[in-house]
Image (tube, helix red, strand yellow):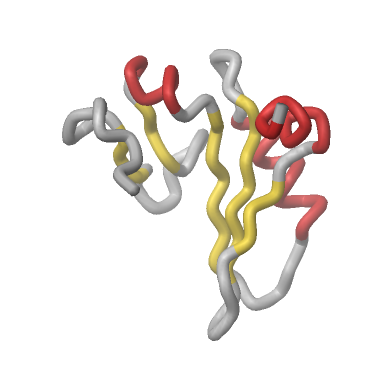
Length: 90
C-alpha cells in the first residue's frame, strides 16, 4: 500500500535536533493529508503525560497532537486523544 503518494519530496521533513515545535515539519499539502502535530520520543524512561503535554503545546494550525514513542527492542507506539481517535475511525 502506497502512503502519501500525492506528496512531493520536502513536504514532510524532520526537525533539527533541539529545535522547538513539531518534530516533523509539514508543508500545507502534507497537512491536508496528515493533519497531526508529531512529537517523537526515543527514550527508555517513559514520561507519557509530560510528553503528551508537549505534543499538545506544539499542536498548531488546526493539527491534532500525536505522540510517537519508542524504546529499545520494543515496537513504536502512537498516542492520541480519544476524541481524535474516534473521529479518525468514524
